[in-house]
Length: 295
Image (tube, rainbow, N blue to C red):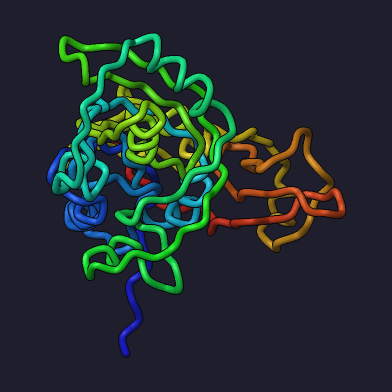
C-alpha cells in the first residue's frame, strides 16, 4: 500500500461558516482548496448555524483539542410558545403553549437558573457519542436514550426583547460543550411553557472572533504559534528545544497550563501540560520547521 504523502501546509483557518453546510463540508472545502488531506475542525456547528469554525490544517490538527476547549460566544433568538423535535427551527413542531411573559420575568429566570455553573442534558440531536454511536444518528432512527446531565458554565447570558413579545434575542458566553438550543428549551420550560432556538451564530471561540474570520474560500492560515494564542507562551533556549523534541519533562512553568512552548524564533515547538508530580510534560510535540501557508 502506498504511503500517504505527508502534509506540507500547516496552520489554523478561522472560517465564518455559512448556513446550509455542515462543519464536515467546510473541512472538505478546505481540503480541496489547499490540496491537503489532513484537515479537521474544532467544535461542530449545526448546518443551519453560522459563524466561527476553527479549522486546523496539517500538523495544526494535533492542536485541535486545545482549540475545542476554548470558551464560546453565541447569538440567537429564542422563540417562546413552540417546542420542536430538534429544539431549533429545523425540526417539526411537537408542542405549543399559550405564554405571556415580561422581559423582567425572562431575565430573572436566566439569572437564577441559567447563569453560572449548571447541569445540562445533551440533546438527542447532537454529535455526542453514547456506546460508540452519535446521538443524532440514533435520533434519526427514532431511538431516544437516557443522557446524563453534564456540568457546563454559562459566563454571560444576555436577553433582549424584540417587537414580537414571544421572541427574545440572546447572547451567551459559555464553556466548551454547552448546547445553546438546550438553554433555549430549558428557558421555555422554566417560564411555564416551551421554546426553541433560531438564527444561531457563533461569534467567538476564545479570542478568535468575527474580525479574524473569512469564508472557506478566503480564510488565511495562522501559524501554529498564532493558533495557540489563548494559552500562555513560554520561549525556551535552543538547548531546551532539543529536550522538548525528545519528549522530556521540564520544571513547571508559571501558572496552571497548558503552555505553548516556543523556540527563540517564536515557532511553536510543543504544547505542555502540568503533571501530578508538579512538572510540565509534553502533550503535543510538533515536527521541526513545518512549511506554513500564510496568505
